[in-house]
Length: 212
Image 1 (cartoon, helix red, strand yellow):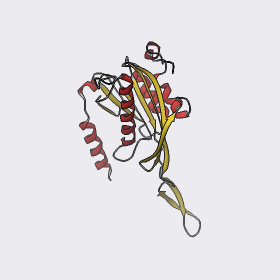
Image 2 (spheres, rainbow, N blue to C red):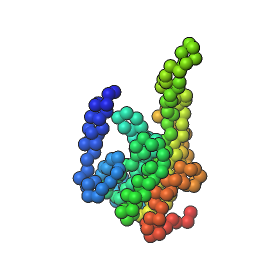
Image 3 (cartoon, rainbow, N blue to C red):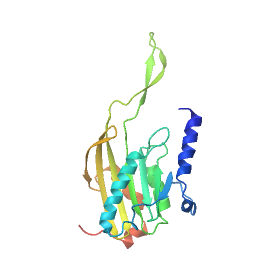
Image 4 (cartoon, rainbow, N blue to C red):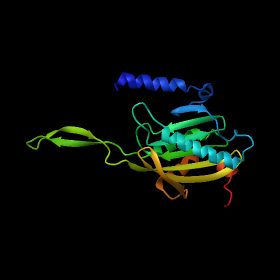
């Protein structure tokens, strides 16, 4: 795929998801869409059930997140009940790139729901090759050494009738989920980092966690 084709696909995908309300305030979100399953939706369903459904939807969205040329290694979502924003690491691969973006932009949301996922898919790597005399002949791109990997996710709601945090893991072989389960929200480096998305956010004080 050449650069012109990649650029065309990037702009085409961007245009497909233009949301007028997203331009009300500056944002560095990779994508903004109308919220379909957030705090103000699903009438007749308990707030906790809405949050559970929202988490399931965000897990699916995170695993499906892609660029024309690659897939992000870290994604996060925020919801204000009307708009769903997706933040990517833009190729740096670091959690703090995304967490920092979310921290700055979620400050304007009174009752935020947030979700973050670390997606360390096996990556191809460069290997030096040598000629018959042992001299460096250049590098070639090798495929990943394996197909198994583990995704870690974190979710937090502070409003919309919910004040709670959850975390979990997904074992995958390629893109197929082979096992899944819960994690303590501070069990992993990734979950502790995602917990910082609402660091010092006033919603944590206004909507404290309920004792379990």
